[in-house]
Image (tube, rainbow, N blue to C red; front, side):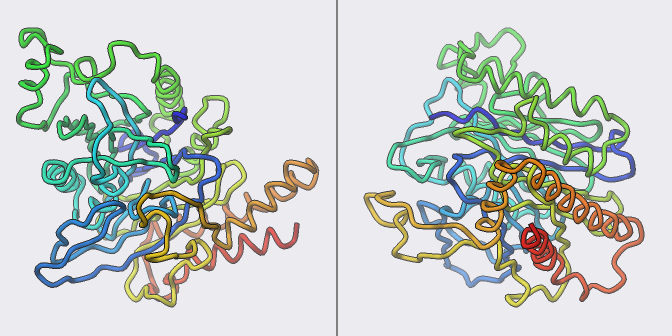
Length: 421
């Protein structure tokens, strides 16, 4: 089973309506997979400590930054997220000439989380991810299933001033910097001749493999992609549709614009079926460093039937304020993912919000009039929160302590809307 959808977007001034960067991503995964939204505070570590990722342990760094992640509940890494320095990262599955099969190593989703925990700028995130690729490689099944499902990864990374696209093929990679305009990615290589950083052996490796003659202009996507594009044809269509939707609002792109794009089903960006949109994220990052970034997460499938709920990094967020309603049950050492052979069973990973949303989604599907009313109430709540966030984005945070419970309280309000249905 191959994914037929996954898209990440970024818009920078002058494409946006104000001096801010808008980041957005749909995480498209198996339809029975639960996506949780979780917060991890900044931490200090002693020398010699390791961190256990999905499949392997690696060396820990002295300090990790606070992160808010949207992640498949069974693994350590994340599909998308942001850190306290307003770095945002999302990844996509890509395939090319190089085989993606291999030993268990770091998943692309592990690299998303590691980049966020260890980098305070987008460019540093590129360096963190590529150094980890060099040292540990990427590999392992990317689905909670006994059948092996592997891929290479591309990453769209943004901060307060720019965005970077990083595309990988095994340990080889190319990166493109974007400082204005907009960029989107799907499940295909899209870096062409504009390469701002690259693996030192990127071109020699391609030449040795006979993929490039060493004379014509080097085009990364042409050289490293499949000779036949049949497997990624749908990705190419979505990439073009996503680009059109960004162009349509060029100069006036807002958080609401990005949410509308992620909700678009005609383009295939909001996916339904065996692979579907299981979680969505939109971030608004002002270029002014005195203003906070606002990060919206759904924590539920299908953004058309979900509420984008805001989160802001402020001091004093601790265990009391963690979003428990969007955190899945933990099985520790007994988790079937940790035991070998892996994936012999699937435990129940549904968090409280997911359970409530699943029930309401069934009502919306079966009773159109009730569904319309529920959707209206959900949109009303979302609009109220976005209006509140606009004030903060314009004038800054007046009372940080009032925002430590922002995301959990929004989840509670969303569940109250469901209760009334």
